[in-house]
Length: 243
Image (cartoon, rainbow, N blue to C red):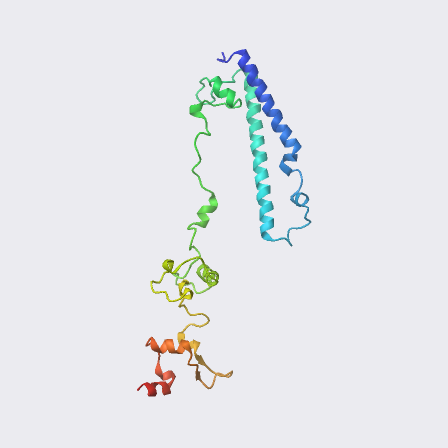
C-alpha cells in the first residue's frame, strides 16, 4: 500500500504530465535544437572546405552541444514515462534499490525520481576523465624528442623555438640561463647553431666547385677563436700572427 495519499498522487501525476508536455513542446518548437536539419542547411554553407578551420570547429562544437541537449531531454522523458507507468502499477513512491518509501517532499521536487536520497545514483560526481587526456599526457613537452638517441628531426621544441623567437611575455628573471645580456638570449637554447652542425661551418666558405677555401672573419669566427675551440690550421696566417 502506497504511503502517498490520493491527493498527493494526483498532484504528482499532474506535475509529471506538465513536465512531459513542456519537454515535448520545447523539442517540437526548436526542431530538436536544430538537428532536424543537416549541418550544411543549418549553416547555409554548401561546403566547409573553403572555410577557416576555426569556423568549422565552432559549428561542430555547437552541433555536439545540441546533440547533448536532445539526449538530456529524451532521458528526462524516459524517466517521466517510467514514473507514470509505476503509478499505474502501484509501485510509484518506492525506491527501486531498497524498496523503502520515498518522502513526498522529495517527490514534489523531483516527481520522476525512482530512488530515495540514500540510493540516488546521481549523488556522486564522476571522477573519470576524458580518454583524450591519457593520449595527451603529459600536457607539455611530450613532443620534445631531443633526449632520444634516434631523434634528429624537427620536433616540438624546434616549433616552440621558432614561435618564441618572435618574442614572449617572459622577463629575464624567467630565463633558463642566469647570465642574460639580451632579450635575444632568453630563448630556449638561444646559442644553438642553426643551418650548420659544426660552428666552423658558419664562417668557412669555398667557391661553387668546392675549391679556394676562404675564412670569413666575422662575429662567428671571432667567437669561435675566443672560446679557445678554434683550430688555427684553418687559417695559418692567424696562427702566425698570434705566435
